[in-house]
Image (tube, rainbow, N blue to C red; front, side, top):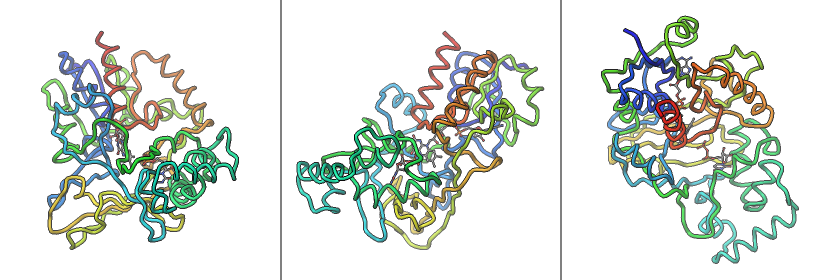
Amino acid sequence: MSYDYLVVGAGLFGSTFAYEAAKRGKRVKVIDKRKHIAGNIYTEKVDGINVHKYGAHIFHTNDKKIWDYVNQFVEFNRYTNSPVANYKGEIYNLPFNMNTFNKLWGVVTPAEAKQKIEQQKAAVNVENPKNLEEQAISLIGTDIYEKLIKGYTEKQWGRKATDLPNFIIKRLPVRFTYDNNYFNDKYQGIPVGGYTQIVEKMLDNELIDVELEKDFFENKNEYLKSFPKIVYTGMIDQFFNYQFGTLEYRSLSFENIKLNEENYQGNAVVNYTDAETPYTRIIEHKHFEFGTQPTTIITKEYPKKWFEGDEPYYPMNDKKNNEMFSKYHQLAKESPNVIFGGRLGLYKYYDMHQVIGAALTVVNQEFQ
Ligand code: FAD
Ligand code: UDP
């Protein structure tokens, strides 16, 4: 059979592309080296609970078009992410908001909270924040930095906060209202019945063939010869034989534990923000879908150094790696028959809505 496209990676980027291409009558072959489709958004039903196998995933977007787009595949519930932080047994609301400030300092009004933060900033003098530590202190002062950010961040990234880029902490809202919603976006939720079905539906087309446990690099030259066009969502540096060096990632390991109790921690996500606890967070999956099962499944998420062959979860988007990526990106632009996309293909800390948006942009360019 002759195909129009080979899509490497059955994650959200590759599957969105495959779905849109097939809708336009193109024949698509999708390969993935894993045993399952859906990439990092894969969920698996265990004891009636949808387990997020590669870490907690909460869908959120401000873009109505993206929201409508995902809703054509699945219904979303009204879950609102409100993680809590556990710092040595003290519990604080996240993201940083009036509930957090009240618990920490006893302040009641936004003016009091702002005054407290200004005092702490003034003592440290961070006019133009040059790294994550300075950025965090300039946003919310030293107390929150010390209790809720420093330990978590340095575990998560395996580096001093003074050696990390500012943008990472800007992901989190700082609010002077009593609002524990982790995101500012208009739309948010969890697919009723898990994420995998989104990708199942995207790939359910007679023009799409899926082959699992197939690594592109086992047959790279053959694939390049026999497919007119390739959409590649694996690691960009690997595609180019690491010729400019190896891009760094941060990896994770997940410890899944089944417990014979109904409700272990009372929330879907609890962050452990001290430096000593070896994991960053515990996920209790049933709470994403308001589950009432008699037992529960929790996952401890341990950050770890990435070595070649490990799962590359987070790109380390610092200056050195971004510069190396630019060189690979230039080569990518000179390879007109290969489209690079997704978290790994573009080496970007993309969320799901951004991956879908980026895939749809590529689709528009490709089929204009
Ligand atoms: P992936 O899902 O990684 O898919 C790439 C696929 O390519 C994989 O299946 C891989 O096996 C395959 N592949 C790679 N190389 C090869 C090869 N050589 N041959 C064959 N196949 C190959 N986003 C949110 O919006 N909200 C969240 O709450 C959220 N939480 C997250 C939590 C964690 C712990 C992580 C790691 C990510 C989180 N994300 C979240 C981000 C989200 O997972 C990504 O935006 C999205 O899954 C990226 O899709 P992708 O297709 O680019 O990559
Ligand atoms: N972060 C933190 N304390 C927390 C939660 C997050 O310091 O309790 C920091 C940490 O550096 C993290 C970043 O904020 O990497 C972004 O957090 P987010 O929850 O968006 O991380 P992700 O879900 O992408 O791992």
